[in-house]
Length: 213
Ligand SMILES: C[S@@+](CC[C@H](N)C(=O)[O-])C[C@H]1O[C@@H](n2cnc3c(N)ncnc32)[C@H](O)[C@@H]1O
Image (cartoon, rainbow, N blue to C red):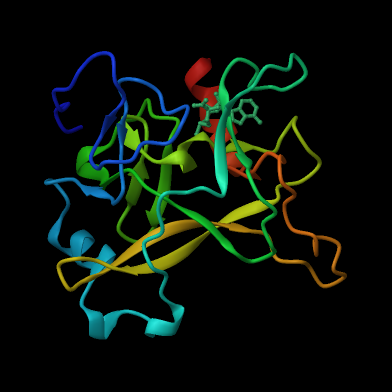
């Protein structure tokens, strides 16, 4: 992992001017991904695309910040499996299929993985690229898994493409409100005050059990 930036021990650290309320001290708040210097060239090119190789501009998302549509909240509820930790909650109604926010962190491949991280989201399976938000990231790192909290997730991860400052197009993961569904049962989307919950996938929990054994 990259070395930590120096900063006041009393203030949360940030790579930009704005930090959301509830952001923990000692963690770097990001407005854009940080790329590992050890990324293989092919891996680098798979996530930082030439404009001509990226999907149409219509399918691209603009870099959105700050994320006033969500709120980092400490969970104080003995029945919640992440009691005492934090979760991410909607601060306004969120319609089906809308992008809530990107999942930002340290973009790395297998040359530079933190096996102990619980915040490492896959970005490109072919090249083994992940986005690790254990030491740096944005509000999305606080999204919990739905298991034990709700009957089903209300959000999912989807690829997004964002125009970056260097003329390239970044492939990122975005957190989206789940679609309404064929029967329209999720047509209301996510209500204000509701916890945003995804599925980490069974693999996350089986790996975790293995680590604990
Ligand atoms: C990506 S973090 C989510 C944010 C975390 N709650 C926090 O405050 O930093 C993943 C960790 O959250 C906890 N977690 C998330 N969803 C959970 C769930 N459904 N049941 C138990 N623990 C959960 C686990 O400790 C897991 O390793």
